[in-house]
Length: 74
Image (cartoon, rainbow, N blue to C red):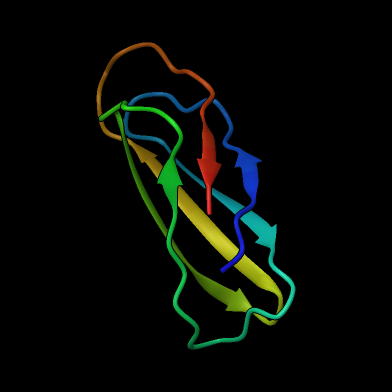
């Protein structure tokens, strides 16, 4: 198991952002999981192994409140 972090960009209501995170040894078909290091319910976070050694984290803001920057942990 590997844990790393990345900073998600500030997102407006309904906006989506992709962040590619380098994860040495990750291969297509591997299981990947992402979560936010906050109790916020304003975001939906998903991830998958995008290519060898790279995981793509997708975050979507679902509330209409002010955008914030949060850190995602893998």
